[in-house]
Amino acid sequence: MFGSGVNFTLKITEIPLGTFSNLSKLETLMLRGLEITEIPLGTFSNLPKLKILYLYIDGLTEIMPGTFRNPKLTKLWLYCNGLTEIHPKAFNDLPELKELDIESYSLTTLHPKAFNDLPKLEILHFSSMGWCPEEKCEIKPEALVNLPKLRQINLNTGFFGCKGYLKSLEVRV
Figure (cartoon, rainbow, N blue to C red):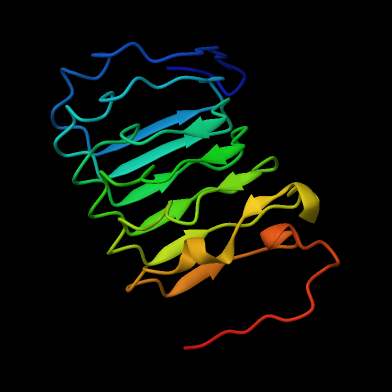
């Protein structure tokens, strides 16, 4: 039994393909603060029962299509990585995803079709205090269309790169 003073620090920058291949009953996976910068395509595809993936406070800078390929995943938390770019179709292999957290202090590029293949997405955590100045951002509001089940968006200052520039915001329900 560990005492209250025991602290383990692991620094893992990549997840080798096949790392989780023998964990077929795993439903929740938390990879926090490991400095992961690279995830090979298919890393999570052999986890048939995986529903919740926490991959936060790591070193991911971009999300490519197929990175999180898993048809059962319902919750994906990617906050506090170093995300600068989310590509189109980045989440296209997550048809059951209901909650997504992509809070990032350095996100500069979000393709307008990044969320197009998330028909069941209900909650989007999309807050950031450090978005880039308006003239450098490639984050468009069109990214939030085509989300028929979306019922909650968590925003914070700096959304759409409009720190102090926002003149109008229209919300239709």
